[in-house]
Length: 321
Image 1: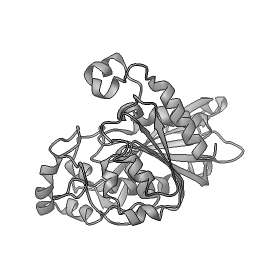
Image 2 (image 1 turned 90 degrees about the vertical axis):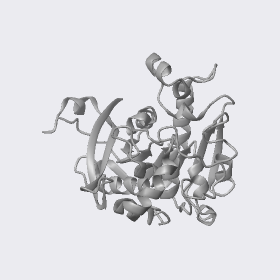
Image 3 (image 1 turned 180 degrees about the horizontal axis):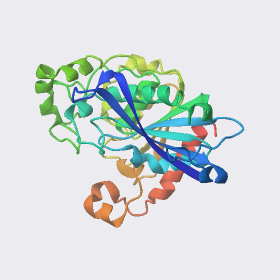
Image 4 (image 1 turned 45 degrees about the vertical axis):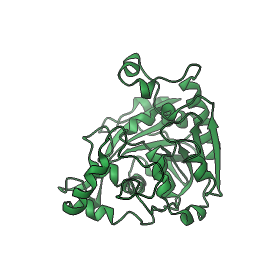
């Protein structure tokens, strides 16, 4: 099978960019199966034609972790394509490595759920994708903050932010590794930034999108502890929670097990004893391991590629393939 690849940019005109100078940008990457003949054909935009199958393909929308990027989930997207899916990953404005970090993007995680809904809306109207997507088989996957995003889209509602003043969330920190002084930005933004104030007021909205039939929930972090527990009890979509037993960023019992005990439709998969939080990022080069060993150096005996295969197979099973 040949895997096609396309990047695109949509806008949500109902929400402002964090700069306040236009609509919220929604950049995305798509991976999809293409036939040998189609790979030789080009549209005017020089993009391969998506394969014409006997039936439209199921689609999985993917949400990256805090400060990450859509391309960081290419390992999962490509494996899903081999299982027969189209995979679409979204870069979350202000919270993605492809643009300068913004405190607003890290504080207002609930905006990410709406990103996936709007991208899906526009893909279903896009002439190259609309006829290729099976509208009855639409799924979700997310890593870390992306797991929080996926849970919102199947019914979780945020009650508290882990960064708000006097946060009731146990173990809350001052900020993630990408933005360690994040909590210090909140008072100024609440007092002076109109775009942020509008977003903060949307914290506890219901972002459920009934089109999503199931969610792969990878290494959910402490942000999930801010969910209203009654909303978790109402979730009726299958949610497969996957976490490493050695996850020090999002400890197993504090986050994944806490969720499993509150979402009746969920299942929990614990990866081998020495698997940590960043197993859900791509395989690393030697340069990666040297620059960020805490992210790219796994425990002895842990094979990231094999674990990736295991996660993708679990996703395909969850999504009916």
